[in-house]
Image (cartoon, rainbow, N blue to C red; front, side, top):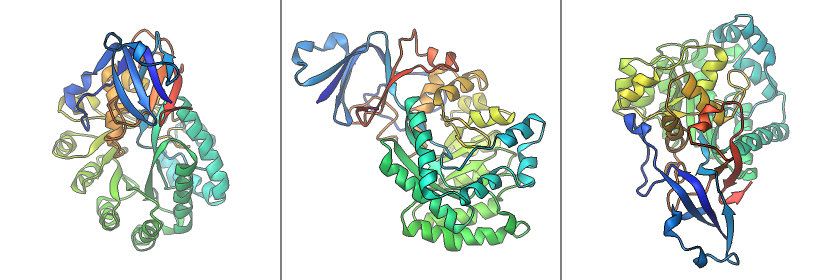
Length: 415
């Protein structure tokens, strides 16, 4: 049965002629229809428009499920293009260390951080990892997320990286969410390779990448190209190997320093470069001449007490911006995209229109899903949010800490 939503207070992020991404000052624009209707046919958006243009007599209840959305807004579900949702257990002990003043790098150097998560994951079965991750997926879905990218990177050896990616494959089967998988074997250097980091890079290139490809386990490849992790040269070696197997790059870059990660991402046509706290004129210039989406993770910078990326300079220069949660146990233990929107407004001084564009169409682009998701357009997948009664769409990032979502539709179905 088709679904007809009527009396929508405001239909947000509509497109008559779909675009792939929104750049620069155009991010301050948001196409909406007040007092609108929307029709879903199976898992797709069939039609939408103003209520004054529809005759409800032509839509009998015998053929349509009719939902009255008086006082409520409808918008695309969030796309979260950077997460580490498959992990074993939490790391609140390190949270206490952070409170006491230890830095992210100091915790990592003494075997904490990513290495701690790797140890836990290696001791946990695929079944348990799947069960834990499904709980997190169900939580973020209830908060409005309709698509999510999930990375490996807590295995740090061939067996356990493959285990993580098999878990992600299983999640794709179990969850209605649209899920993209990313191989992140180069997330950190295992303790046994300290002092011989290039040997670990060799292992990634010669053993992990071929095995990942043979089982078709990853859509993308990622490298933590930053101070204290992987160099530009090591990143290039990994990317060149993965690209030969059909994996497009998505990079961790410039979170801790001016690492060259942004430039190497652009050089190898990365779909996105993420974090970007350390972004200067050279980095902005490189991104301007590329198809790479700059993706900011304000939850991580907030949790770690780091500097914020220069987002106003980036937008003023004409760049697009996507936002993602970085949901992980060490530096951003939340996948609540509503809170990410609030942080972007409060900490980064982004406008409500900018953050809505950044968590919908631009975030869909950062996942390679811009033709399927991210806007209200005919033929696109019906991943939608119905809000609680709210005054304006600016209320979405304004009322931080409260859940503004009333209902979520994934693939046209109420979850």
